[in-house]
Length: 375
Ligand SMILES: [Fe+2]
Image 1: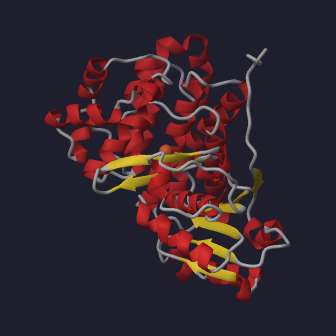
Image 2: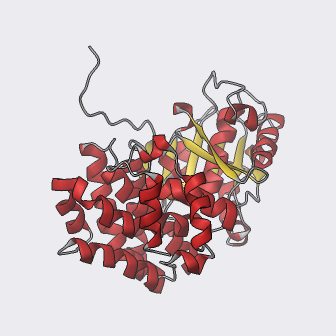
Image 3: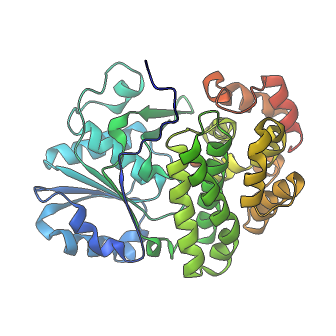
């Protein structure tokens, strides 16, 4: 008989701590001959981080693939796979934000079965074999991609988000060095931090939640709610460390539960209005916390405790206050989404299977009423 007990599984080795980047080479398989280092914007190059990596890993071993954009499209992945295969890379390191790590994970997987990523996204091709090892090194504190088995790919023509979803996408190693987040600009600190907070709370109220994911989720909520403002205001190293740890724990939580309604409604906001992910997912978090609270029954008190809130109204306010204090919008109108656009958000963002992971199964009409409250 199949087990009906709670299960938690995460095959990624996790290394956390200030200065751990200096030990990156120790986590690269000794047999590695060529390493593809995937990165995003120019920041890591101009800060000298990529040069450090090259010196540490060996000049002759490293091939750089730089310039992965936010919200990568299939061509970004296909180009990086060509770079990996043509250089005979046998390890991929993704260093950067969530999009960079998503691309690095895809490239590592598709390097052993190269074909346009669209064929896998559409289901025309199946993933048959594991990829080459991927080491994920986040330079932001929020997405949790370093410990999940999904990669998000955007289709700019269809204006929608696709997800590659496979156990082979879990990175071999997640190396989280909070010092890499010290130079994050305020806006990135705020939006990635609010993404992590939303992921933690969604993991906690998810129907798939279980004791281990709950433990990570509550710890993540507490670390982020208590430290994100200070990380945003002053960049204080302790606050940065706590937010980085909170982000990792949020990833450890939702890696086993998936996200729920806040994430699913965010995708059309990003695809159609260009709203940054952390802003798009968090704008509906307070209203769904209020709406989901009753269904959470005995689970609501530990969550409010983690939010340092005496009551539900205080918990909702503490999230809204944190958003406002870190420059995020709390009203859809301020993001350019007006009354007439609500139906488009719901039409494109309401997937029954994702909505079914929410503690309350809302109808599209009920979601419309809830979004009216934050118009
Ligand atoms: Fe997210």
